[in-house]
Image (cartoon, rainbow, N blue to C red; front, side):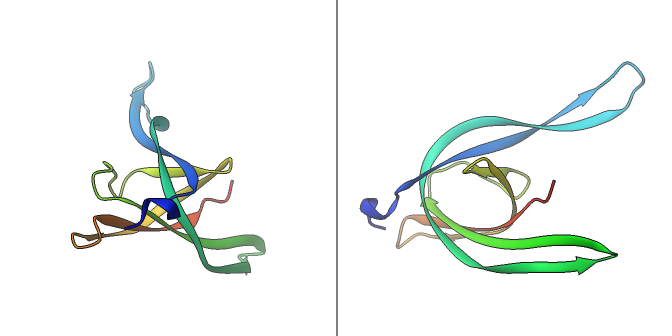
Length: 105
């Protein structure tokens, strides 16, 4: 992998499960660390699902292989959160390719 292609800064958000006084559990995503990545757009569009407009945009983030990321984490890029769908690791390229979709809020 070429370092010159890692032009975007992304944040990796790790899940933290918190419990309130009533015993309810909530997932809270907190920033764990920042890293550099190559970002590519895979596609997307606007879909009408159950009379609700849903934007499904997919991105591919390419990072170094040592970056500690798993399927339960989220990626923050340009003030938008992305859900991780797939992580492919390549030893010859020393990289991880992370396929994500935009979380609609």
